[in-house]
Picture 1: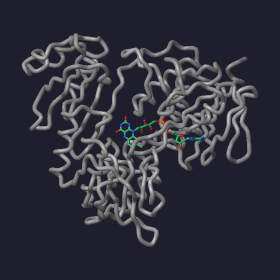
Picture 2: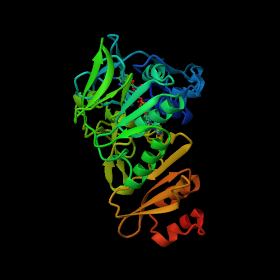
Picture 3: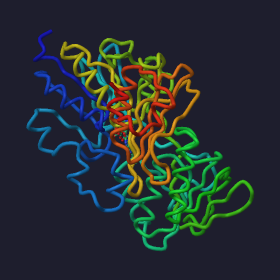
Picture 4: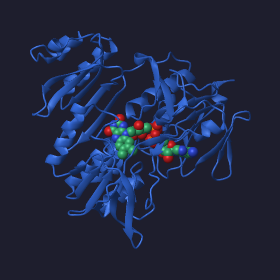
Length: 410
Ligand code: FAD
């Protein structure tokens, strides 16, 4: 079929979906593109929702992935406030929440992830919040006044960033973490200790090894978080930040393989040649580490959007990237390159006390699997190159600040 008469439908108008639409046009796709999203606004960036948008420093224009006009100028049909409710793979159509159906030649699933809910008494009380959308961020922002008490359930990145923003606005913040340290699922103990101490130094109370047993309220509004040991942490609002779940149900119902996300290959293809999947909703190959994984990051959304757009346009698949991620808290910029699978040693380069350091994660044979860099951009950039080249380094080389990271990466 001629490209001009082929129709690409993108389900999910977030970072990945919006980027895929733009990349298809950049690569010269001439056929129709329809981008369908359940949120009422054009694609936007989520990272500021726990940072600059929450503190009021970022504007709506900063948040938008592209100006609204871009979509009409690029003849990308944007159908907002519309949910995709089903996929008929045989008929090659998607069903919509407004009762309509749309036919596709190629379908890209860019459905993202949703905040995990806590199965606890009191979760429906007013003031129990999650943080995934701009609407969520606005609700949280409305509670963050000087002296207001915010309980953050879950010491992951989103919880820590919201805590930092909350402190910036003068709120009293308590982080409640079930594990023995914050960032337990995503960072090594050295980094957890560093962030824990930094937050405490900024006046954040942190309760670790603390199970939440209920959210308590009065008059339908939250008043406190009850812990497993019986203590109650009084609060005016509680942010539940206990991870995200892939939106892969539509794909499952359509018979596509899903394992903590929609399974795709390095071209973002599912097992159905007419269906691609990208971003937070996927389980994807991590070729450097020879395994599959689900990544929740902007760089991953962009990489997979590129993979899908290139494949659909008949261009060579882009070279796989080293996964990376960032988090901003106070004046700290954390940048992480790679994933510390199968590591046996962590080497500190730089100065933890000066909040300027990088942690190199090595396997038993010295291969660098990941670098976590705090206010150390050169180590992060060099780390990405070192990881991509599967370089082996020794503790002595890494610790020696007279050897530049460029030399280490060479
Ligand atoms: P999303 O951007 O979530 O987009 C998915 C879209 O699909 C959503 O609009 C959703 O409403 C829509 N949708 C879902 N189901 C349907 C349906 N059935 N029909 C129609 N539409 C549907 N990453 C970083 O790298 N660095 C950061 O600092 C960082 N900070 C973050 C802070 C916050 C508060 C959050 C929430 C995320 C952050 N992330 C960060 C993660 C990053 O934003 C995500 O990885 C990225 O948005 C993934 O893009 P996506 O398009 O896959 O998903």
